[in-house]
Image (cartoon, rainbow, N blue to C red; front, top):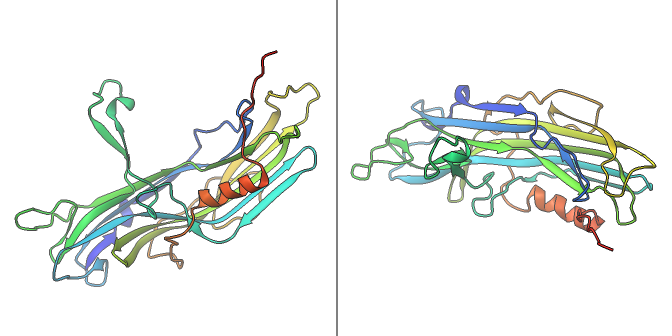
Length: 297
């Protein structure tokens, strides 16, 4: 008995990215844009003695239940028209988190004024957009985010946490010598878990098994292209279930289903993040974008 994932009411959804503009000539950058995705993990109290975690503790315990994501594999391959080539493969799993406070959970909660969603609504009302974790109290009576302060009674109401991600990664459109990007390839493979933590104790309730997001771009040379112009280009992005290690011309969206347990892989919970790792590589290769500076005569 205890808290268990509610898979029938959990969802994972992939859609085209909003950042569907891979070129930024003024900022001297290109972006590897990939499918956006949203995941909602639902969980609740299950009286079945063979399911869930928590058991029948003698006292109330506090648990944080939320989403942990790992980057399992990443590949970046950048080729410029002067023959320069930069390629890196990261094959070890690392935490994929944008939180400075609540790591290893995916992100800090995101709550925005209601008027940003609907101008008719007042701005003093706030709407949660992304809540990647929840703090709950658990006892032999069950669990609750807000137990009764007088009796300690638990309401055992179903709870959900969610995350929204739109991965992208960029580098210099032109090198310092003026060389223009010619070919870009990127692969990002992820796995995501619903994790519960109490002190040093960790339980994994459910997972979204590995999936890969792939992007490629090619530019077409032009003798008339200005140094701050946008080169003619073609690009595509697609997704696949599992860990992809090769870039194809096209594909669909990743098709993955949430499942109970950890999917035969324990999440990495500590250490450098995927962003830290990739940005450090950009810096060592001299590929961090530098905006074009306009000089007046």
